Each structure stands twice: as C-alpha cells, then as structure tokens.
Length: 367
Image 1 (cartoon, rainbow, N blue to C red):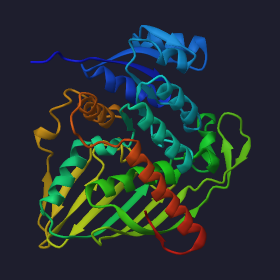
Image 2 (image 1 turned 90 degrees about the vertical axis):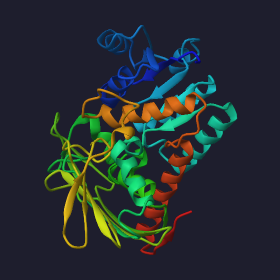
Image 3 (image 1 turned 30 degrees about the horizontal axis):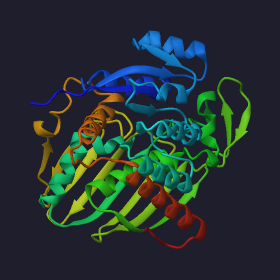
Image 4 (image 1 turned 45 degrees about the vertical axis):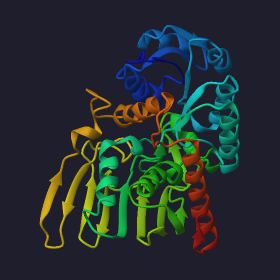
C-alpha cells in the first residue's frame, strides 16, 4: 500500500466564505493540511491564523505560494481579486481551488485556463453542487432511466437576501450591485443551478432570457446612503438541452427564500427542494420521485455517494468538503469528474449567451 499523501494548503481569504465553508471543509478531510493564510492586512491575517490554528500568515499571495510546504492554493475572496491572485498561485506552479465565479469575464477565464494548462497543475472551481452526493445520485438516476426520457426541467428560486433585501444592502455586498464586478444574481444565484442542470441532465444548446434590475437604487444599511445598481437581480431563462429537454428557470429577489427544481420525464419526475433551508448550491437537498399515477416516494442518497466525507454537518462547508474529496482523487492521479477551469469556462460562455439573448431578444446558441 502506498504512502498516504497530505496536501499542504494555503488559503487566500479566511473571512467570509473562506472561513464559513473552506476552512471547515478542509479541517474535515485528512488529505489536506491547512498550513498558511493570506489576508489583506497583517493584523487580519494574524487573527485568522490564530482563530483557525493555522501555522503561518502572509499579506502577499506570491510569498505564500512559493513556500515549499504549500501544494494547493485556495482563492476564496471577492471576485474582482480572483484574476491576479490566481495568476500568482499558478505562477508559483501550485494546484489551485478557485471560488466561483472563476473570473469577471469569459476572456479572463480563458486566460486562466491557458495558464493552468501551461503550468501543468490541477485546478478546480467552486461549483460545489457538483460535489453534492444527492446531485450525483440524481445524475445516475437519470442515466439509468428511472424517470424515462427527460422532457422538461423547471426551476423557481427565490433569494430575497441576494443581493438586496427590500431595497437594502450591507457594505460588504455593495460590490454585487455593479455588473462589471461579475458577481450578481445571474452569475451566482442562477449559475449554480444552471450548472447543476447541465451536470444532472445535459448541456444547454440554446437559451433565451430576460435580465432585470428591479432594485436600481439601494440603501446601504450601515450608512443610509443610496447607491445605484446595474446588476441583474431578477433572471428569467428558457432553453433547450442537448437531448431536447426544455428548461424554464426563474430567479427572483423576493418572496420566501427557497427553491423547487423539477426534472420531468416520460415515466415520472424528480422533485428537488431544500433540506437545510440554504441556497441550492449549499443545501444537502430533499429528493422525491413522483410517478404519473401521483404515487410519491422520498429518496435517500445511498451511502456510497458519501463515503469519501464523514461527519461533515449540514451547512456551507458540506458540499465544499465533498468537492475537496473529489479534488483529492484528481491530485492523486485518478480520473474523476469534477468542475475544473474547463467547466468554469463553459459556464461563463453559457452566461454570455444568456446576456446576449436578453440584450437582443433573440434565442442564442450555446457553444
């Protein structure tokens, strides 16, 4: 039996999503050792290292990345910083885990993929629904024909706190209101669900869509000042998948938080709803199969889908931990499907097609 490999890991951004999801996920897996953290300020970096028991801290990603004990660099900061931080990690020849979205634009994503290929490193992007055991189980049910031929997919997602709640936003999320920053209802709320649909059923081949900014003026909670928004906060999409199923999906910045995703086949349908009352990509998911007769059954995800990760509680770290487990297999040389920069570029191109459809009013081909 070969030696067990432990992958030394450094994280850029231990506050926010990094502290909520990535650090607990890494701590749950023996294959990774979190050795270093990089923060924007020396005091915040030191505080994060002390809080999480991390041995070293830096304010410069390049300095952290060149350390000999660091094999993997995680970039878990706000999207506008991704490009230059990932370039520093890739430039040091390190494997990388980038949060989603990978980049602000498709051209940035293309360049990052090319750099990762040139460096010959492994890479993964935080489309963590693909790591969710229930999502992987659903994919297999569909492949096995448990609901026959898939004819339609319908999704309704209500996200009243993303990015605004009754026309308000906190300072930490003001950047979501500027479409140029690349992080909004389309690229986050919608993209995670649309990517999961492609994974579970089939890729999109054409789309049409409507993008609206229904809160063009937003009040900042801490200051009371009004800021303008040009990022979409309401997304409406229809499209066709490669195996000819039709899709309708709506992402609304209002209502009671939640989602329902229906995958409708010739012999029944799979109904996906929240189990943990979290956003789709974080939730463990409740799965039901409904036959044409109306007979319904709750399906539990078999144990073989969860064996790689044990004792990870529900919450933001759950699906991220499963994604890290898949990444470990890739790092160890195994052929395993996971969302890498190639998948990220595909998702960015899908979003481009939706934007073009919304701007032109014409259905767009997805390449």
